[in-house]
Amino acid sequence: MSKVLVIGAGGVSSVCVHKMAMNAGIFSEIHLASRTKSKCDAIAASVKQRTGVDVATYEIDAEEVPALTRLIEQTGVKLVVNLALPYQDLPIMDACLAAGVDYLDTANYEPKDEAKFEYKWQWAYQDRFREKGLMALLGSGFDPGVTSVFAMWLKKHKLKTIRSLDILDCNGGDHGQAFATNFNPEINIREVTAPARHWLKGEWVETPAMTIRQQFDFEGVGPKNMYLMYHEELESLAKFLPELERGRFWMTFGDAYINHLTVLQNVGMTSIEPVNYQGKEIVPLQFLAAVLPKPETLGPTTKGKTNIGDIATGQALDGSGEKTFYIYNICDHEDAFHETGNQAISYTTGVPAMIGAAMMLTGAWKGEGVFNIEQLDPDPFMEMLNTQGLPWQVKELAGPVEF
Image 1 (cartoon, rainbow, N blue to C red):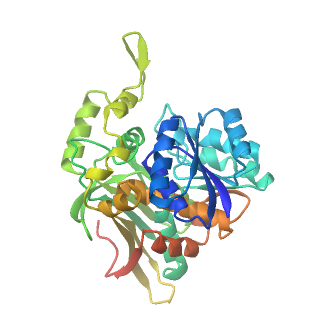
Image 2: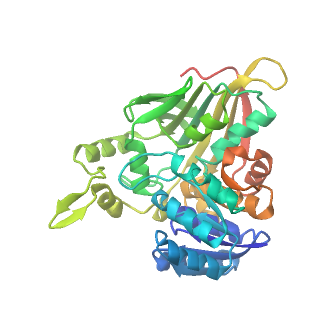
Image 3: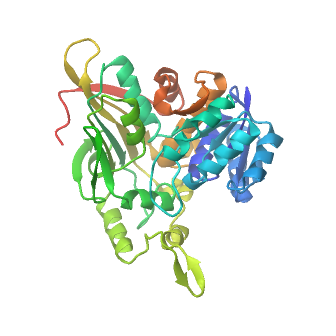
C-alpha cells in the first residue's frame, strides 16, 4: 500500500482518481492537486460518494517547483502522477527529483510557444533520475501508453519482429454538441493542426495536416474516415523497435468536426501566436479553448463507443512466415460514465494512468532512470487492463493492411 499525488483535475484525472479509490489495496492514500482546488474538491466528492474513499485536495501551480516540492514532501507520497498539461511535465519532473519521489505521466512535454511533440526534453533527464535512484515512466495513457504496450505484447507473444505498425484511434461517440473536443481543447487542436509525420525506412516523412485519409470499418462502431497524424508514441516505438520499417498513426474525425476546424483555422482561431486585443495579449487558441465545452462535462450526453488498437505485421514467432495481428480495445461511453462519471476518452486515458502507477507501486515495474512504457514487461499491465475496465482482444488478419 502506497501514497500517491495526482496533479491535474480534468476528466482524465477524475477517472484515474476514481479507479485508484477502487483499488485501495494498492493506493492507501490519494492526494489530488491542481491550480483550481474547487475542481479537485468536486472529484473528491464524487469519489467519496461512489467508493467511500477520502481524497485530500490542494491548490498548486505545477510550474512553481519549490511550492510543488514542498507539497510532495508534506504529503509523504511515493509517486507523483502528472495528469496536468504537457507544458508542465518538466517542472513536475524537477520537483520529483528535488523531493526524491518517482514520476509518471501520460503525454510528452511540449513547449507552450510551439506545437512540437518530442521526447528529447524528457529523455535528457535520464542521468538525473538514475543517479537519484528514481524512476520516471513516460506515456502511461492509451495513446501513448496502451498502444505501445499492445505492440510489445505482440512482439513478446506473436511476432519475432514488427515490420509495419499502424495505430488506429477511433472515437465513435456522439456528444450532441455542434463542436467540442473529447480531451483538452488546446492540446487536441494543436495535435490535429500540426503537420502529419510517419516513420518510413529510418526517417520521418512529413505531410500537411489532415490531407491523407482512409476509411476503416471499426468493430463496434462501423466505417469511419481516419486521418494520418503524428503522435508521440511513433518516436519512442521507432527507437525501441529498431526493425520497424513503417509506423503510422490514424485518428477518426467526422465531417462536422473537420468543417468546424477548417473555419476556425481560416479565421486564425487555432493560432498559438499572441495577438493584442483591447490592450491585452491573448492567444487565440487559448481563448477558443476557454469558450468550448469542457471535456469533463460531456459525459452525461456522450453515447457510442471507442475502438483503439494496433495492426502489426512481421515475422511470426513460431517460424510460420509473415503474419499480421490486430489487437484492440472497445470502450463504451455510457459504461465509462456510469462507473466514473466521465466519458470514454477520459476513461481510456485515466485507467492506464492508474495501472501504470499500480505497476510502479507494486514493484511489477521498477528501474532507475527515465523509461517509456514499451521498455517494460507488457504482461502484468495487459492482465490489469482486463480486470480494470479495458478488456482487449487480438485476432490474426489475412494479410497486411492495404492502405
